[in-house]
Image 1 (cartoon, one colour):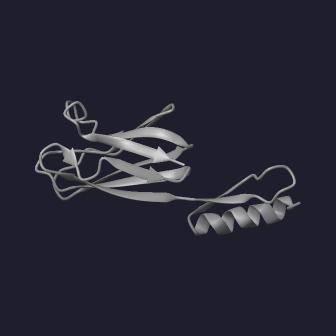
Image 2 (spheres, helix red, strand yellow):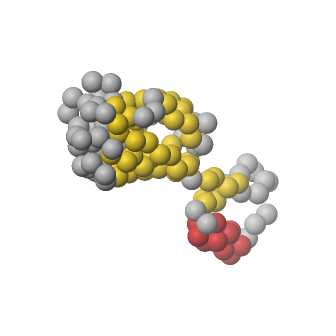
Length: 126
């Protein structure tokens, strides 16, 4: 069993490395959950360069670089989660961050009309 002081020290140390300490099953040591960083590009007028992304359960960050002549962003939706990056112009980046459980989500551009025009994809979290 890990003492409160040891657990606090471990959580602080892991956080400095970009990791999170989560409680394990009864009688087992806590487990580490790593962040997942994903990249995406807005290309053409209304499209992303990928139609699907995969991540591990935990903190997921999608960084979208806008290589399009139009303004875009990246957002995540599903299972009660709504995360949205800022709308950016050509050459800028938009970032959406969410803590996700296993399941299927949608990443999309929230600029009116862009998702309906097909600027979206599937995000699978395991």
